[in-house]
Length: 264
Image (cartoon, rainbow, N blue to C red; front, top):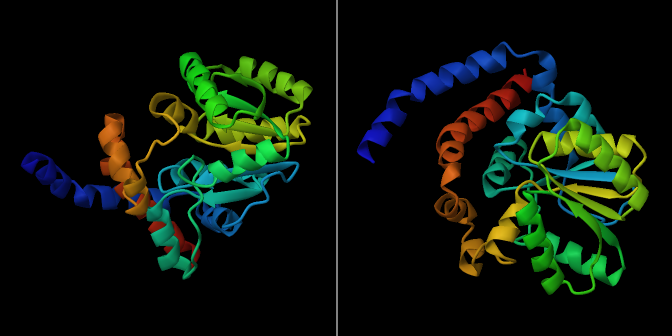
């Protein structure tokens, strides 16, 4: 633990230096993205708004989204994923947004319930073949009358994604959940809409694999109440250590510098 902290302290100035270089040498289009993404963040959703892509933004995936101006332009709405970005938005814009994460700890419970009540058909793409089979089983047990039009694993190449988009458009589900990770899921969602899909698309990151591996209630109730989801994930998913302790501090610096430079 001591060695790790010593490492972090030694490299603190390095992180700041790299962030400054990247931001101030970045094309202006990257810097403008903070003003393209954040105004699209919503605190309420019409779940079944046709022809709409709903993605999410958090501290981590902002790094990828800021490099995709055309994709961001095509996404209709973003939801706020994570308490850390909620705090930063409050500091930057004095604006209070609700956390709407794409999972069952947040608004997906109401979305799935309403999908059943309004007889909306759904399609899922993401995770491994085993995981998505498990996910569908979990969802069917919880939402017995949910109309699942189909599903596919997320380990597909570009040509397979082209074929998959054609299949989805033919099936014509009301809602498609895309869990391919940023930026692949956003790019695919925009491609799907551009090629004629008229339903509602939700990107959902690791939602499918998390639910498949850990069940409906991924987070214990007290973890949700205390807003300690990040710590719980860190304990459960050791692969996130690098993200939390290296990429997150770097992303916070990039976000802050983007904001400051956008005001110059």
